[in-house]
Amino acid sequence: MTLSRFIARRGLPSVVYCDNGKNFVSAAKEISTFLNSNKNSIADFAAQKGIEFKFSPVYAPHFNGLVEAGVKSAKFHLQRILGNNHLTFEELSSMFAQIEAILNSRPLCPLSTSPLDFQALTPGHFLIGRPLTSLPTPSLIDINFNRLDRFQRLEQLRQHFWQRWANEYISQLQQRTKWRVKSNELKLNDLVLLKEDTSPLHWRLGRVHQIFPGPDGVPRVADISTTNGIMRRALNRICLLHRPDDEC
Image (cartoon, rainbow, N blue to C red):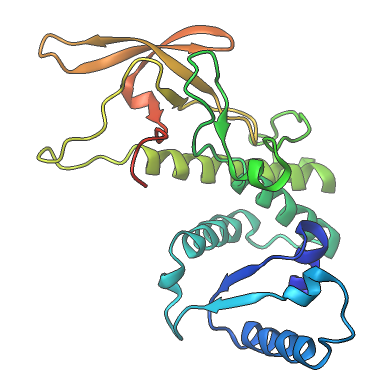
């Protein structure tokens, strides 16, 4: 059913990468058997082409790399924000859809090298061709959970997940290396992410306008050009996104 929902929303994939779970293996065998036994009666080109399943070795989910890391991160925070709350199926389905949008809104790298372009490439661009957005809502994080109705409680859970996961993602962008390993230095017109409290699916992005080195020649402050003007921030509040020419 999960595969059916995926195809209904995103279209027929040509390749599916997954772990070696029994349900995935059985689905691959069933699809292959059906296509092989009905080759002459299936006229649809997409169905005729079929789906290629690529499985990782048994008991080795780490072979899927970033995919499994994203699943782990979502489960980790979801388990802690839900706690002992009881959600209906519709509420839980809505929560999963909103968490999916949050994960797919993360900025990856600049869309262009233009200093006037403040947009970043996100997974949402590969799904719908543009960044994912959400409805504006008031902040409910500091309000007592018992004073909210069910819709507001669901929104509060979403905001808690966003706060936890966004901080984790920013921390990964700000990884510190040993002094013997030279890290990437900020350059003029680099696209950066500002570490600030924002509403879900909203990332504060900007371009480096000017860098201010200290007496030792090491930069610690920079002016960032944003859609709201130029802001001065310390470098510990700035996260450099991958440049297009950086190695992944």
